[in-house]
Amino acid sequence: MTQQDWVPGIIDTAAPSGARTYDYLLGGNHNFEADRAMADQVERAVPGIRAAARLNRAFLARSVRFMMGEGIRQFLDIGSGIPTVGNVHEIAQKEDPECRVVYVDRDPIAVAHSELMLAGNDRAAMVEADMRAPDSILDHPTTRSLIDFDQPVGVLFLLVLHWVPDDADPAALVARYREQMVPGSYLAVTHMTDDIQEDKISAVAGIVRENRGAGQVFPRTRAEITALFGDFALVEPGLVPTGTWRPGGAGDIADDPEMNELSFAGVATKG
Image 1: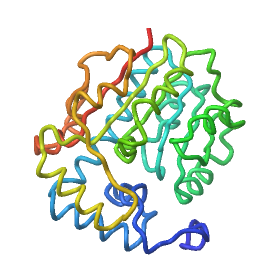
Image 2: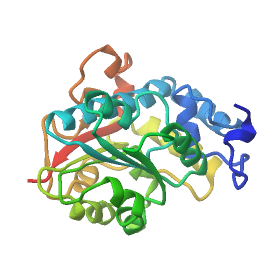
Image 3: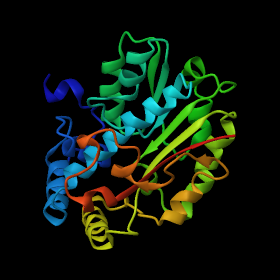
Image 4: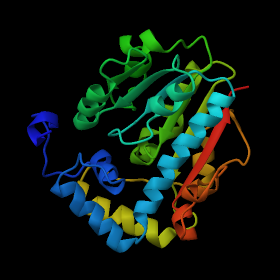
């Protein structure tokens, strides 16, 4: 596949994207020089950052399998990014082919590549939308065709809410999604934190600030991240460093303990 095959014409390839930088850190190919340059800067400042990115991906798999074990058969992945290995539909539909998945992202490359990947899968689809406009997602015809909000649903916000500034009230934003979820639903969140590794997170935020202009990261405290779950009940072990949420093997935890502590992870249920 040539670059022309997967790059929408509206893309400014000189400006780094959070989705494409994450893709590069995970070893993907859907990124540009500006994305790689920013990621390399971050890696020089925080050696091992690739391991932290992989931890988030491993948590995605564990959280989806956990929700499947609790009976969830439909998922809404907000800010899903550029698809790589171990996507939600691959994990869920491997266990139950009837599972339904809707991905949401505003990055045109994430959207274009997801649509290519999902061609022919009538139980998974992509919605191009901004997570900060929840009604445009929740009421989207594609969402409504696959997600029955009268039944429990698993909603994921993985490493995306730290892109929402405080003045946009991320807790109120997530509350709008929670309101749509019936009892028995689950919410999974990973979020960058400066509670433990403040120097490393400050370095990451500074590099993003220098490279991305308006697109900034806003690391938050454990208390602030906990507030995103509202009155949902966190399942054991609660909100913890990402690598320590129900690890199932060596690949779920970074060799460097500090890489486990750059973000918090949690899953909560609506009673």
